[in-house]
Amino acid sequence: MQDIFSNGFGDTLLRFAICVLVNWAIVHFLYFKKSKRQDFYFTFMVISVAIYFLVYLMMGMDRGKATMGVGLGLFGIFSIMRYRTDSMPVREMTYLFVVICLSVVHAMADSLGIDVNGRLTGTPVMELVVIDVITILAITLLERYLKIENSKLVQYDRIELIKPEKRKELIADLELRLGIAVTDVKVGAIDFLRDMAVLRVYYTANGTEADEHTYSGKGKNVWRNRLQAKYKLGNLFRPYANVETYMSNGWDKIRYAVGTELRLNKQHAFDIKYMYQHPFGQDDTDGNRHILGLGYTYKF
Image (cartoon, rainbow, N blue to C red):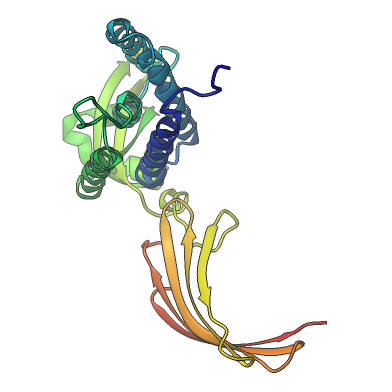
């Protein structure tokens, strides 16, 4: 009877899990944290899954056909990256390229095995992990130390202000109308018939513009996890320690706690704990805090 799965499919699923996890971390913590574009978030993750299995199945052909098949397949894949129905910004195009490349790398990695000479063949998982770590570190450093200017296109009606000598008046008028701190203005198309010009306005987010992308860790969309270890010390004490994380579009804050439950009987119990809170993002206004907690529990 033919096996349901081919040999090495378990290794394939392991590489797939690593690939999806790494791509999700890149998209969620590095890309989405700044852009807030859910449409590209969806695109990146779905393409990551599709590319992985497409390349994996093409590599399953005879070795002679695989090289040509993978080459033609990747040619078709990269040809659709222009998204002819909509223009894609350079930053989004770069992240899409990274996601596709990592999916191809993980899919084309050979399963581990031993040849007739007793030598190890294939691609160890740790090699893929090292590649993933290098990629994530490179993106993290570039995102952190390279400043990305926010910009928007504006159809501007006061065409007399686009002259070089009136640049200060133009910036002041744009700041007054848009309510943002303008850093630079570039003039694009000019329509003298309608007295209108298209401007690309570069600005720094502040005020309402910044509030759209801030998060205090107190809203509804919070991913909250807690890992706790507890030990029963006799019938009275149950000491414990836990770590609790708060995540929205990145790491918001983390809490460390140590304490003990004091069980008087099956119905009455006290809880005494010390907690330390450390925020990661600048948007969290709580700051570092030392918390002492005292609780009481009654079971009916």
